[in-house]
Image 1 (tube, rainbow, N blue to C red):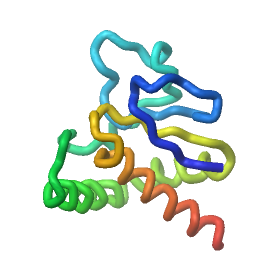
Image 2: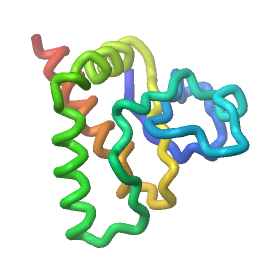
Image 3: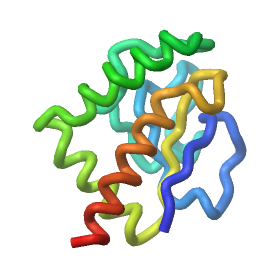
Image 4: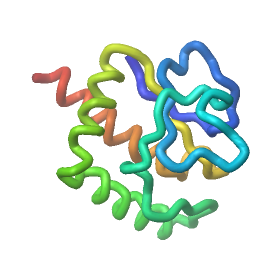
Length: 120
């Protein structure tokens, strides 16, 4: 199947599959309103940045990737990857930038994990 990313306020689409938010739900909203299957705060970046320049984006990707590959996060990453092999999943982000956000980094890691799983 596939891993998609979407802004948290983009409308739900049936192709989204299970939607996961990797940070806190914004104040005034509920998981039901946003059609979120789960909130995975353990994988949230330490800080969410918006409108990063090239150097900031490079540093953020490196730092966040290092956090994601920590042993305590492996079961969560494995679970998401296995789910994405069977069905579509969508990682939601809150930043305004559509390509420089934590969901993009997580999506890349998940796709690498899926590729490795399928090659075994």
